[in-house]
Image (tube, rainbow, N blue to C red; front, top):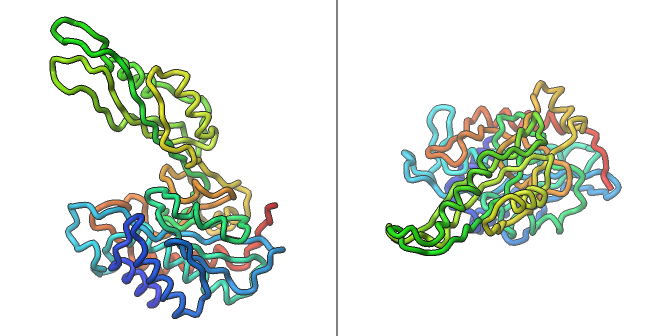
Length: 351
């Protein structure tokens, strides 16, 4: 485990915010060379295929991301200096997602040395925190056919079997400028209020116990230039978290039918994801005493066109916070749990 811990410390000390992961990808490449693991790279995505690949067998993808968000101003530790205090290792990206990245690599190394009935691919992806197009979306077409993925994210090593999707929608309500004192014009803010009220109160009828309802939250609003002029335009942004009952396009169509504002989605490609509870990967986790749940947070699963389960060391509530940390005990347990979960597992092959 010492090699795994030292790799995580080196990653913490290497700036790797989204779209700036080059140095961290270089570090991982050198580390894989040291381990004697053949690998490929596309942009800042790095992957390795376990020896003995056979296209007739199912293939398991082990994925975690390289990048981090920017450090908050309120850090008490230096975010780029790995700092040990008791069982805790502090540093930017220690919890999200360095711990999963290094633990999955160690699991890949150990599993690759044992006979398995499936192929294994380990992928360290870039730009996950911004869902960038030079991240996993760029790497996936270059990988072998994938049948199922295990995505490392901080879940307390509990299996997330469904994940909410994301769609960000920019809206513009229109009115007509006029003098506020004379009650002239048509106030765009009032049109926006009507639309925002619908977004706040409307409930999509289909939901599940895993992911609950679709949630639409207005998070940004901007209008007006001076106090005595009715604004002819009001811009607002809506954060939409979708469940597995609807596609993003279906949600978008419903919004457009009910709002009078102009609607422009930034993207509809970040879909909700799920894996059948009967899948052998999930059932092995259940046999280990783990409890499947639905995750409200987005990951690279949104861009995977195959079944995937999210499971990793650490906890989501530590992510994107000042003084982020991972426990050394969590790292040790995660590697052992990954091996127990995956060693000897029999996976179905998808066409």
